[in-house]
Picture 1 (cartoon, helix red, strand yellow):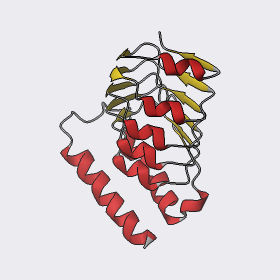
Picture 2 (cartoon, one colour):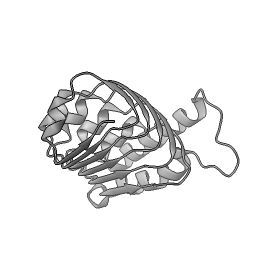
Picture 3 (cartoon, helix red, strand yellow):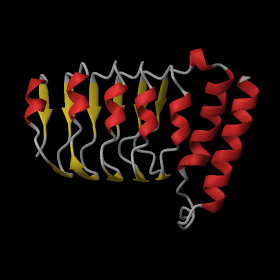
Picture 4 (cartoon, helix red, strand yellow):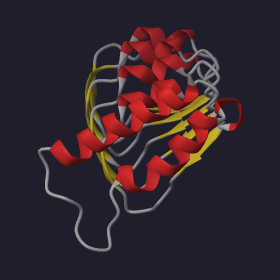
Amino acid sequence: MANWLALLLVLVLVFQSVNAQEAPPPPGRPGFVEVFLPQILACLADPDSCTSLSYKYRNLIGTIPTEIGLLTKLTEFLLNGNAMHGTLPTELGLLTDLKRLLLQQNQLVGTIPTELGQATSLTWCSLTDNRLTGPVPTEIARLPLTMFFLENNMLSGNLSFVSMFQRATLE
């Protein structure tokens, strides 16, 4: 079964990268798929051993694939300081073991998916310095967050529930 999923994932990611409606990364600047794919395949071959994906400050370009939701044993997903764009996949909510989600300093757009409230182990989340819009989903209030950073986005709506966190910033 794991081999079948790995093959499916490879095909989906290759299709996404080939058919993306964006220019390829400039020379010397790796795309997300090229860097991320080997580790995803290793994770799918042995999912229980895959607990951390860390690609901080690698100058990566691309979108976060929805297949991230297949890596259900992840406890850390760190992509801060890259040039990731597109929206946050709703499949982040499938990562119920996820404790740290650091996606700050990218170019992510759209809304924070309500499904993120299903990542029930999430204690540290930073989405600062992106281009996120819309309201912060109230489902986030159910999470055991101790750190929650949202500044330098274009978020709106009632943010009063955020005061429950030990440290939360919304500027």
